[in-house]
Length: 255
Image (cartoon, rainbow, N blue to C red; front, top):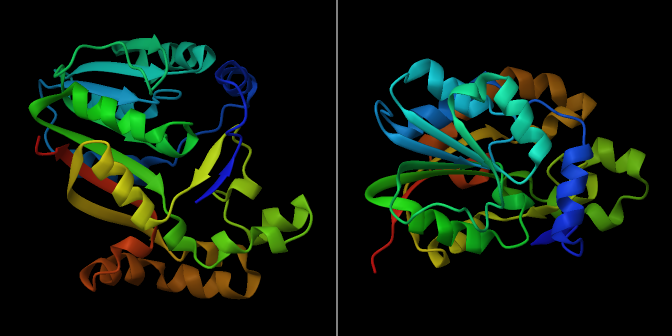
């Protein structure tokens, strides 16, 4: 597991996120895959932990107008941005994903997308998600997967200079990120984190296989040609754990 920014105080992390440029999320294809894994959300109570600028909440609101939506983000600035944008129909709270101020069993679905890797205590967050889920509720977690960009996640110390790292290392690598805090989980670490937090993986999906090849000029054209086939066939061959991004649907674990 590779980490950066874990020595910062919580206040420092919040301040850096408030001051950071507002980057868009992973886009419509990612949102579609997340919603497909979540199932029907009609009239359900839904929480988005680490909602950022509210792209996922807006997508849910468009598709499920009867869903009751709540969003949480540690950055007050991002919460205000979400309120001005598509998240305006949701109730939004500025608070830590490691200590969400909601009652146990309150939510039919809890989303936590591309957030766990930016927390000091991701296992605590998973435990809170398990606490917040209704008995038959489901959690949708997504996280970058270091196993999916091996061996590059082990080579950071060998690449000198930020300019070169930005061209040879995946963006999710802690040595090539503009995030205040970042963690690089392998597939096994992700699975263990979920289990220890009190959730069971019910379904696993992958997205963007061998995507780091996009950063290599010679391989870029080949990758663009074969990417659709990889997305289709690798999951069928049991290769989901090698995806660049992992999407997990989880239920509460057995007591």
